[in-house]
Length: 307
Image (tube, rainbow, N blue to C red; front, side, top):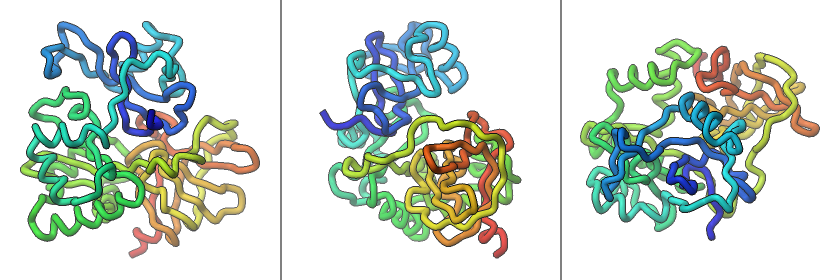
């Protein structure tokens, strides 16, 4: 079986569906509950089975109450408990065949087989009319897709983000930075847009040959800290967690577990980051996104703001 990786979905023995949120999945899968079958559910799969969608907080409460053995920093499901694994890269043809907007995005990207997929409700067959499109692009191909999103918007093949859509994203994420600074950073990422009025994003996931060494586990918490540092390597800044290697007297890496601060700075830029400092072996990492809303935590590019 191919390794289970970030943005796959898994199903447990009761048919509950979880979004994989980790690369460290050899013995048990790190994930978050998303859909549970039930007669009162608002989502319906192709067989007619109804499902309820769970947001982050409700998912954790339900797992703690009904499946405490899975509880943790993320939910952890033993490999032996898995009924099914859904992989965006293997299911993309099925999804595109029944969803013309996904098909149009595939035509835009023109990436090799296995380089692109689709996750979220579309992967699970539980989309509705208001569902966004969560495209997944693997490894180095993500940067090709990013350039094609930028070019596609310039050519009019897809739509850029409207002011209303930027405001919707901002209010959904509730970041600790002002709206204008949020949009200033977001506009240069080229990882989201609209197609026929439907919002889409392109999500980075590591290729199968680059899974080793992904950050995992919680370190010893040393307390809250704010730093200013130069980014020496942002090649994994769109991963989850986003990784920024930095030049600083005590901090080796800045990691963001919230999508809000992925791609927030480029190699060579100076950042200001506020988060929770953790000890990982001989290194200290500054963690952004220690809570769902990342209250009091942020990353901004001082280089960008200086321009």
